[in-house]
Amino acid sequence: MDTAQIRSHMPVVCSNNGQFAVVDHLADDHDHIKLARDADGVHHYIPTAWITWIDDKVHIDRPGGQAMREWTTAPPPSLPTAKTDPFIK
Image (cartoon, rainbow, N blue to C red; front, side):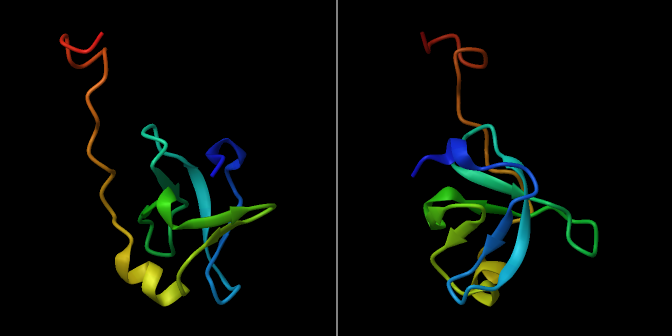
């Protein structure tokens, strides 16, 4: 999946073809999408592994209700990089 196609403000659509979220941005790890704040002002994260295709929307592989039960509110843990780990070259 070419995650470079993901843009801020793109609708996120579930397998039932209903929009349940909007992209805020692709997380730094490129393995998660940070979603725009919900009505309660909370950001959520979903893994890019859920994406089935991208056009003018981000389509995922599960119904919206399931996605909302499985999304997280914490950013994904940071992966070590050359900046954070002196043993990575």
